[in-house]
Length: 326
Image (cartoon, rainbow, N blue to C red; front, side):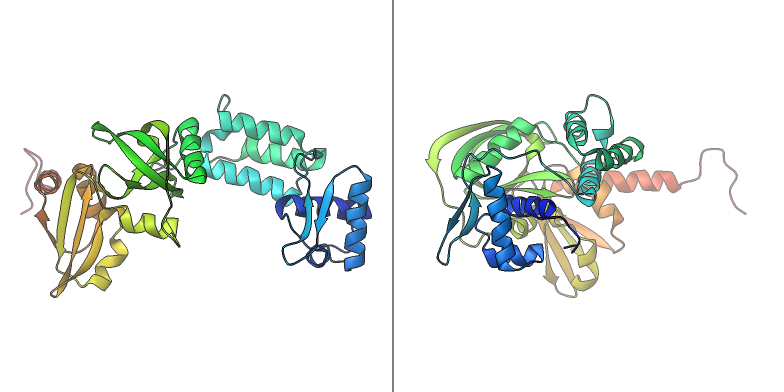
């Protein structure tokens, strides 16, 4: 921390630390402020004199924390924090630069509340920066997303209505383990009682959420991101099985988790999974893999690959009436 900060600036920094890290000890506070423990306690005293209710507790689980319900002064951002916030919003929500976008409106309010010197730079960044939307991203409904996150936090089972990309709709009772954001898409990682298995559902395709009175316990030691990656390519309506002639080590870098699980098979490897959209699986995924392969299943994927192959074959054929090379 800069050594030339005023006592007021250090006291505000101490307040920020107590907001974000309840239970901070005098030693930890001193280390982050770059002062002695005695000085750190003095800054806590300054906060108390200003009417901010800072509680302290002794023991291994003690430290300083703000009393519940304490009214705090407006949030203060540093220049780096403010600009980083604007950049993160534009990166995740390119439409935030447009009038009428709710995220953009919220960002404008934050910028308006910033001090003049910081707010001017943040406003300029928002006004003049451009962001290209990610064609693969999908924005779920905030209310339904919030309902799912609340169910995860309270460990309450929910009843969801889900609609696949092909338009098939069904209801399922699920234990919501986690909501995970991956490459611009929001996923619900859960245990589906309908399938009696782990499932991953796109949150933007969840069209209704109803909480139930049933509680659940998530698996011990759950790593939501790892579990999502492992289960993205399973549980969909159309099975897939693709055999590659190349070794697994060469094919693996080209396989995305939603495509299924890749395992060795003889001198090559086999990809086993499922999909709700065979046409997309063939056109956007399989067509980019630079190795010979054979689709053993299912019928829907085999038909989709045949359609892509026919299109490419037609595209490479001479146009009617075009002169042939001699």
